[in-house]
Length: 220
Image (cartoon, rainbow, N blue to C red):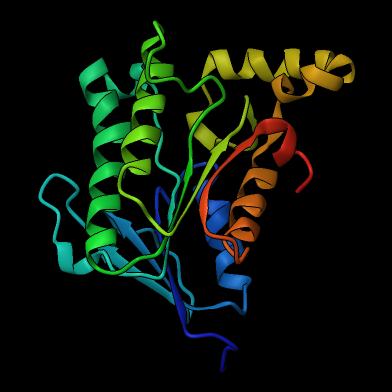
């Protein structure tokens, strides 16, 4: 099969809640003829456009980080990571090193799923790390940087669903009807909307830094 474009996309975090849906949208898109995913282990996914690359994030091979557009969907929790240090490695160190290597190799566009409340000066560790990675990526001066700041993500996490997230999803269904106007950005959001938004935003011709809050992402 031939495709209408010769663009290449690179996805990190392609097996996560948002990442796996971003991957599906990219594979279905005629805009890209090759989708690379960096992974530590085999995913079992098969597609003629898919290039699964085994990658050691702690000893990165710069030559493997080449693409037109980079989609960063990495994310964890302190509980799952085991410590604040391990959390920061996944949510800060890895996205930044991929950003640096991609820029060196000619990538012009970087998109990242951050979080509502991201602030490098926050007293909350999670929000502070999210703000720090946003700042560092901004300082790389990509032609285009899209930062997505969703609220609570809804979707099928499989066996990884955490108790707090389950409670949050139940509360979200109760509270969402009153989340209107300025409160809309706090409403829970379907992870599929975030993924679809990420792929669609990558096709915009405008260059620069763009920050998208959850209320905006609800429209995708």
